[in-house]
Length: 241
Image (cartoon, rainbow, N blue to C red; front, top):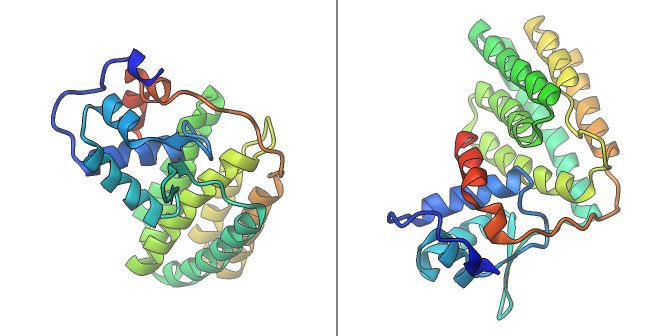
């Protein structure tokens, strides 16, 4: 039951904080696709009004992470296999363009920042920390986008990376990690060498490999909202925000 745990906090939380908690939980795959997100239940868990929860849910719906269904409430989005293919296709186009834009002027500090993220990915993989691995993988691709200096493309990619996390949550084969830190390291090597064709080819192959690791089998991973947003999970989500 949602009411078995006390609210996470009695301090006045706004829709920005609720948005961030839900966004982190979706990206870290603590909230599975199809999970119901009742306004009253979430309001009780977070200690806020339904109005605040509704604002956060509408923002997530704008980013295609949540579906708000008239008279039936909100659920975490469940992208179809066709949508998944379109998301990966869009990412290949955008990230290839970002590499072309960033590479002529990429700085040593940016290469070092990307390398640090890959080192963290490697550590998370070794520790079996799936939530950190997912977060860091997305951070790597977004760091690449920010290095290109095009805020519009960066915003598009941010949404696509978030939707990719949902897709992986729904379609990833058991025992697989869809995004490989070794492949990220190869992309960094090509960027450091300012080898645009190789960097583009490696990125395209990397994203295709991520897509090929998916399957259409849908796992049954339902968990209660109160369990997902219990204090230990909340702390982990805040650390990755």
